[in-house]
Image 1 (cartoon, rainbow over the protein chains, first blue to last red):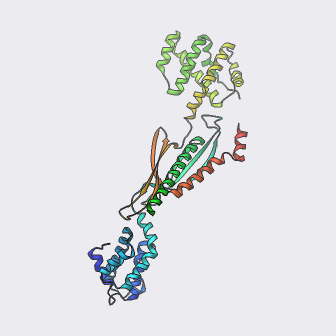
Image 2: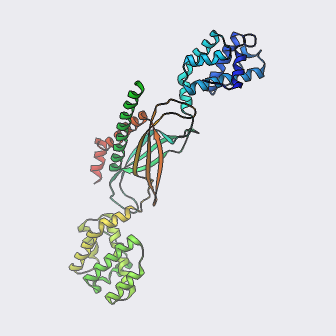
Image 3: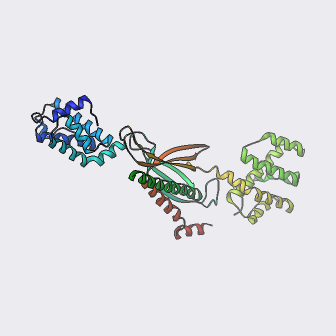
Length: 200
Length: 199
């Protein structure tokens, strides 16, 4: 795992006990993880950080965030992270502190990073309504069951998107369901295969 | 249920006995064509020349027959009701039989034309699917994320549209459960009772 020169500079400041005593160091790590993972709590207003020069604070915050994102992106293990931080002259205690915090937030970080990027509209749910058509102004005695299906979809960028609605006959719904079952069977076979690949 | 024919419609249909059986068959064909493809003045002119009558007579005959066949098919009236409805026209038994046969022969097609006129929502046409596994992205390496990509084709008005959607295996399982419930609902006592009593 490699960090840019700017980020390495930030970590050197973070490793300096005169600039960053133990409590501010811990507070900055918490703030860095929170600013990435918890949108509602993104400030550097922790009382333990009030004595740090704002320019240094900003630099160190950027360095910590870069390291977290880079480690998450590469799925770096503890030894890779440790080597990287040792290069920035951090002592063992501080490195362990970072690694503990990283392990705690690793899963959430992976979900966050995995959700970035464009992908087709994602189906999240389905609603349906069954109706029985009796007559219209054009045609009497139609007597046909009909389904109105609404697929709730989500956009990877903005999160919301108009739902996809359509009507179908009972036969069409049966065909649609059989397609969905086939794709489910296909995906469970695929998932079994992937699990085998992963364990090898 | 009996059909109610206005004086104008009776007058239009009044030309049929004069034209004869073969001509009524021809006019019936023109009436169904009129419903399917819209007005065809040239076909009427050709029929008029062939039968050696005025174009107006043919057009009135076709309009009268169109109303008779459309309205009967729309209401899906029984054979007896159809015969009782045209009795007021005072035609011969032979012509009445011919009209009944014309109604029975063309009813299915006319109902299919009429069903296309009903207001419609986008309707299901077909579905294609593909299983993908996301292995890496710019922001996250070494992923194993299965996803089913679905292309849903819909009919909307005269056009066909397609939407590309994606979902994960657990949502897919949920979709299957929901759609199975939807299909199962039609077999419940409640739905069966309604269907039975409607007919």
